[in-house]
Amino acid sequence: MTALSDVSLTVAKGETIAIVGENGAGKTTLVRHANGLLKPTKGSVLVDGVDTRKTTTATLSRKVGIAFQNPDHQLFSESVESEVSFALRNFGFAEDLVSRRLDWALNFFGLEQYRKSSPLVLSGGEKKRLTLACILAWDPDVVVLDEPTVGQDSIQKEKLAQIFRMLKSTGKTIIIVSHDVEFLWPIQPRLVVMSSGKVVADGEISKIMADRGLLEAARVTQPQLLRLYSELRSRPPSPFLDVDDARDWVSGSRARQEAR
Amino acid sequence: MSTTTSPGEKNILVSIEGLSFRYPDSQRPAVKDVSLEIGEGEVVLLAGQSGCGKSTLLRCVNGLIPHMYPGDYRGSVSVGGLKVAETPMSMLSQRVGLLFQNPENQIFMFSVERDVAFGLQNLSVPREEMRSRVDEAMRLLGVSDLALRAPHELSDGQKQRTALAGVMAMRPRLIILDEPTSLLDPKTALEVVSLIERLNRELGITFIVVEHRLELLIPIADRLVVMDGGSKVMDGVPRDVLADARVEAYGVSVPPISRLYNALSKEGVRLPKVPETPEEMAEELNGL
Image (cartoon, rainbow over all chains, first blue to last red; front, side, top):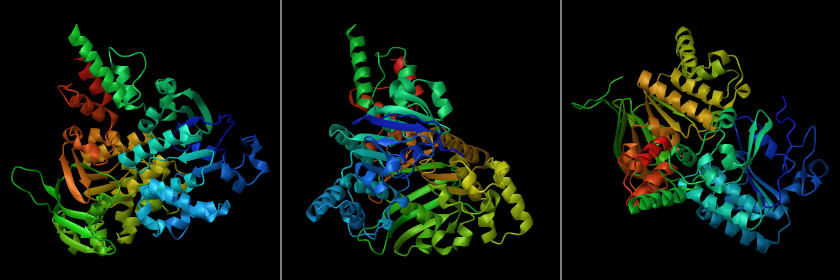
């Protein structure tokens, strides 16, 4: 079976892209090529100009951090703190930097109280955050997140959204694989839609999400705010990006009505 | 299966009274003085931020607590008139089914039909009866054609349906679903939701569902219960609970449409009806 078939994709430095598509479309397989964990059987993958077949995953990982969909595939240390410091030491960071990065990561992801605990005792959502903490601690240029919102409550999702804004503002390249269209919509990433191992669409999220036929084929649903927008009789020229945006427009148009 | 009835109301299937539970290695209780009654045939959504006590509460309902997890247990839980703490797991497992978030943690046999039969085999159900119950469950979940397939050959949606068929073969009155759609693409997730709806409407099965993507399940839910810090803090019809501004502070992933409704109310824009879907919201706004 071919998991990916004739995929061509270029991601610019500093770009945020999201990959969506049905279960089994090849999204995870595709992103696992980014650090050489998987190498193409045909064609090639270049990361910052380097062919992934001509270097090691260890070298590429310094540049590309991948947080897996299932944290159990990633976590193996006896404690949360050694989990985070493992890669840092492997990359040869000085001890004082290891400890500062560790403190920052545990604090930022709300994992401080589990420092000495085994990763196995964490809840699913906490494990997921730990995988992110591990990767962001070594500050890779490219951050790949496979289904980051699974098992996260709204407070953690808001935190994730903040992390995206922060990563974006520091010029990181971000690749998100996600089914969570409500989470992706306000971020307004470039959207790549995959189906049966192929890229079937690639472009602005607002254009692609408006194409119901395409979404149907890729088993993706429209975000709620876009569904609302398309049903409105009177509406602004472009769709609402977030709840505040929609609120401002509705209360503004009410005020205009009352003024008349 | 026996159920207690209070006059004029529907049968109570799950009754939780003054339940508190503290794990041995923890200072504070994971569940604090929770009382909750769930009627036969209800679909109840359980929400709240990570660590609010949802999973512990569910473990108290299916008997993992106190049978498998020791700790300080107070109050009582009964399912179908049986006190959970005094009923053996083998008996509880025939009344309460549990579906995990990741079907891969649940299906592991060589074929779909063996997987569906696994629970019944453990109960030493006679061969003939096992055959008919497995066939029935596979038919119900639309996996009969996959009977001889190995689980790893299935799509994620098929895996979830196979896991649910295994639960259904036990003929439970109550099924607990722990984030059943979180790993599924939106369309497959909607299919699982309509399966839940069908099992509920056609067979009267009661569901307790923990899910962060509320927008998918609200249309089929009768009730939304919110927990915070181990306590039950909100309990009502989803429409009403979501229209209460406190719900966001409890870490519940309130769907954008409900957040918009709340934001508009705050600005003094009152819509005649609390909308549950974008289409309902558009109707309200078009009518303003």
